[in-house]
Length: 147
Image (cartoon, rainbow, N blue to C red):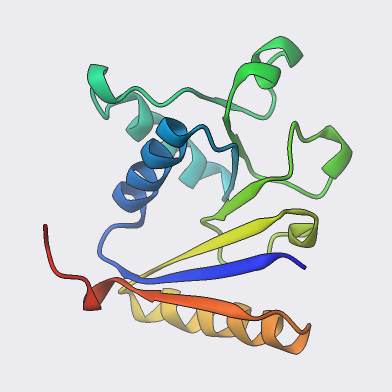
């Protein structure tokens, strides 16, 4: 069964996503990032700006096949055509709803900001996962001590 983790109280979802993806990239993990198109564009730009020493190899889902095959991080706004996805390891969800086809991934990570509307939408996703029998892990970033 898919492992689901919610990361709550992220002060800036975009920055936190970049940190997670940088960590995933350096560990050799393969990640699909699902979000609405405008968020993907912002994330794509942010990943290019993390710095030369912290480059995170990534591409959009519509990249040529040879690029997709070599990119550990793929950005997409639709994960429902699962047979077209290059892997099903980790799904990082930056969307407001459940990603259709999420259950085909080994792991799903949901990011939730400190915004009240974002929290309310996350509660709906949490409840839906729970109703479907998934056990969720909760990571409250407000409980973390700054490094």
